[in-house]
Image (tube, rainbow, N blue to C red; front, side, top):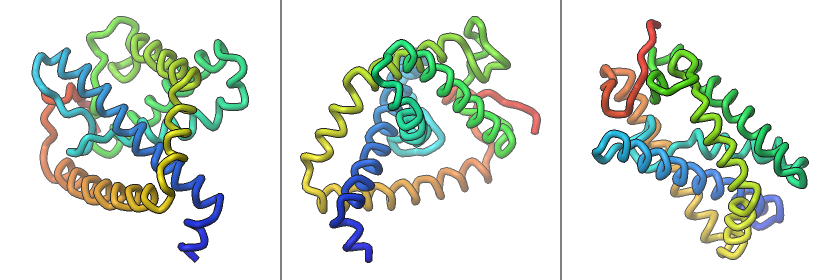
Length: 193
């Protein structure tokens, strides 16, 4: 059954979607880490996980791209809606993290036009820029390249990446649950649970 799925058109599409999840997750981690390393004036590994990945970007891209692709012919609407949806998504993730850990892995308190340090205008404008880049050229370019990779090889890479992600998620979650997260390293913002 799994072999049939991997050899079918739907299986190929699923493997490409999953590969793109990892690509966007790594691109998001790179963007965040470079930006925060610049801000902190030292190398900073962004995100909840220890590895070079921020799954929030892969998940966000998946849902936002699918929600907005029917409007892709109207780029200004996509940019506006991308900024709004990504900001709502960021707020939802923050609320989940606050409930579970009592903190979030970012702090916009020092940014102008921020809401409780969770959201800020600068971040929302960045989401608009990301939506523009994604819908203008990035998504189609990545997707086309993924279809050029031999299907079974891509499926193997995705499988191995999921194994690594599962292990990293488990160990990172245990670490954060058992120990007090450091506030300064990743600019975490604390809330009372």
